Length: 423
Ligand SMILES: *Cc1c(COP(=O)(O)O)cnc(C)c1O
Image (cartoon, rainbow, N blue to C red; front, side, top):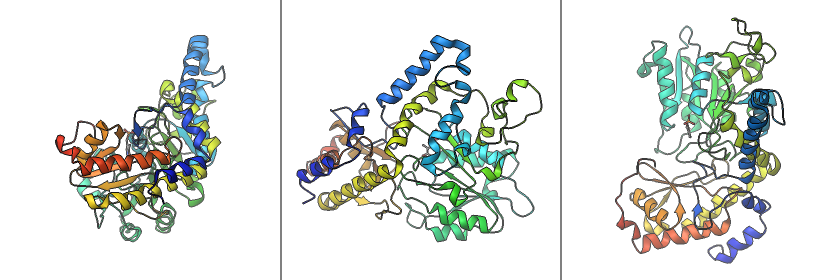
């Protein structure tokens, strides 16, 4: 029976990725289910960071061109290492900026209002930063967001219907920006179909992959997605504030970036120091200034593990972990008023489970004091992310047991039902 602990132990024994847990700094006193907000530190990421510091020590300025990982080429190299995770060509990806600055760059580059094709289409469930960026891009061009930003509505407040998005792809839309996986409900959008429909209507389409990269496979090149952007501190375990990433389809190569800087240059031209920019003929053209080496360094170690384990195996285990978690919730927790608000099926369920409960804020506080790290999302959401590379089926079992005790003994009532500053 899956409700018995022995079932979890059997699943762990047959897990082909189980050795990777030893690669991470996992606290034995805590169960960490928040890897979709900040992934854990791995030993390889730590070593890689040490290596970049060593290069600084040993080579100083010459580190740009010498040593094992010459800094001048590192953003492109890390892009190449990320490309399989999103199904892109190696030169279509670069590690640079942050989610939000990359979105600014891509909108500045790809939003070209013309004639009556002038509006941007997003959704009403997206992360606030993305919407702030879109609004400010419109404001910069003197266009009122009220009129020029269209947000697809959600029928249930948690998920979006492909049909509803497509019906918003009207003649006046010039650009679409949507998440690959929704940050709250974990719903995977049908990026392939949405891209096909956008292309039929001659609309540029880009995706925010913050919650999908490192959690699910993508085929961006094959689908013909125009651009994408993401952070690397969630499922990719790059560390707090690690450098973000972007993808630009090769059909767009060779243009001037919307926001230019000397690192947008073709590498062999950059040090000519001319005042006319000759942009790189790859995704590197969308870089702006000197790369943040120390915040990119952990990715050298972290991405190596993704290359080795392979995103398909990671996805397979992730699906089994979240499926197991849902089965246990159904069996043990429904009587306490929890609702599973993420999509249940394998095609549309991302890397985390989204539970709703009116007392969510204080249930999360009680869980933390019992040694479980969940993720509260205002006003009533609990995200639980069992991560394939370092969490176990036994931990899933324990989390459900602890949650059951917190509810049965009303331990959450010791806390105020209010969110903290960061939650
Ligand atoms: C995490 C996240 C962000 C964060 O943006 P940063 O610029 O990296 O701080 C933005 N958008 C989405 C959808 C996210 O999930």
